[in-house]
Image (cartoon, helix red, strand yellow):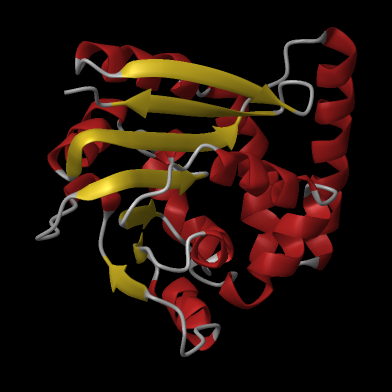
Amino acid sequence: MKTESPKDLVPKFFDETSQTYDRIVNTTTFGKDKYWKKEIIKKIPSCKTILDLACGTGILTFQIAEKFPESQITGVDITESYLNVALRKMLPHHKISFLKQDAESLALEQKFDCIVSSYIPKYCNPKDLIMKCMNHLKPNGVIILHDFTYPKNRIVRMLWDVYFVVLNVLGYFMPKWRSVFADLPKLIRSTRWLEDYEEIMKSCGLKTKRQSLTWNCSAILTGIKKI
């Protein structure tokens, strides 16, 4: 029997959740998603072209557009319903293009000054994703990855575990989110995305830096392509 991979969870998690995603991600992270996005944006240098991988409904994409109004921004996601939500948020002044593609088989006729993504690392093969990023990154470009991490502190970990038990119960009353609340904590506990991606980045010659956020409940990994 084929073992389910993290990427197999993507359609289970996202095919029917686009309409409520923005509200749920803000509520279930107690508003920390907004703080994490601000920390990501702080690491984006002033540049002409920015790629947002797994852009989803465009939460991060539009924040980038407001911070860098003169930059050309491309948002890529694999789930069409999420892209449709993002397109409905578009305003005339936004310099944003949204495209449907799989990040692990990314094929754009462009290289970018900065490639950023929130919540994608745990689903992808680190080597495949980083190699695609490298193929689309300009010299002196920056890769910024953010995702959940399982906290190390014993007390914080205990609270984290209890919280996801509560969410799992709530999932019975929110059928479209039931799989997310049940399977996401298992994925976060098992992933070593931070270590794995940093190792691959370093092997590609990138200078890396980590930032832990909110009692180690999430992290940002930055890699700079120095040429």
